[in-house]
Length: 68
Image (cartoon, rainbow, N blue to C red; front, top):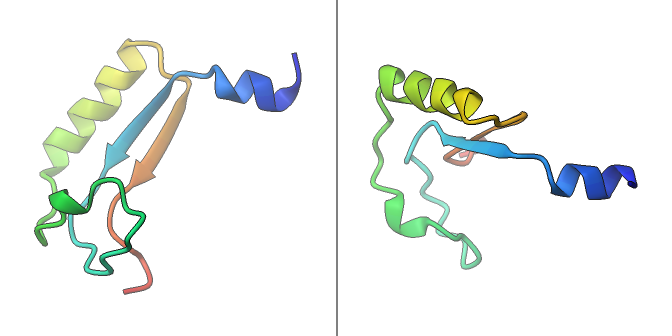
């Protein structure tokens, strides 16, 4: 299996850290969640641990726009 094919089949855990983005990109899939708040640290930790327990092999941290 090619490397890109293998990556396509990895189980990912997408964890949103904040809802602070104010960029309003037209292509954003979850712009409706941007209310200017941050997630609680314990909720983030719980989601990371839950993803690991469910077999996720890749952790993707997301949320907000770091250049704003």
